[in-house]
Length: 236
Image 1 (cartoon, rainbow, N blue to C red):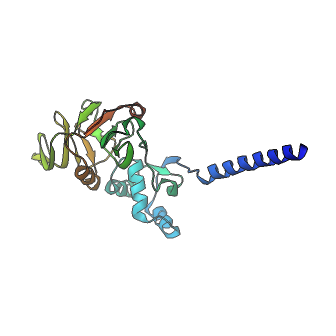
Image 2: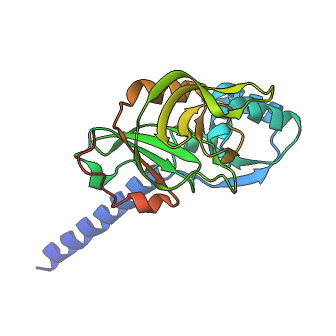
């Protein structure tokens, strides 16, 4: 009996050790520090591998809700950025929920997370694509609510807002969601930089535009946690 008890105790300790080892092997340090980072530091990371310079810039862009172009300018100007303490941990990072259990029966679904400055698109409740996104500035907020993709227009121009030259603003790869608010491509230089539209970098905007269909549900949330148990019904 003592031998059996000792064996069970050793087995239990072994299992616990294995679980701890598994957890440790899957641990990722997603902490970050707000500081200045130099181009030389990024080049040093590229030389040491495995991340190249463009990947490092893209990681910074996603974490700071900007486009890589603006990240390069921030670095040149010596501006403070959110900088990962471990860039490798951010290789496939997203702040968006990987699954939306309440929408497993919904073929396609778009989630706009105002608190994260991110947008994600889902098939049967599973995240298949995402992007940093700029939303409405104070006083012209992107309104929370459930909408559906209406018109799709790859070469849309705004009838409400001019560009810097006084001409109708170009809004490529546009998906209409409500009133004068669209999801479209444009300059992303912070989580709140638009007149209410949801703006993505052009490559991601085109990807979403090709994927979305008229009638696809679009949920705009103040807090991402609101989407966890939200069901849009059967969707499109």
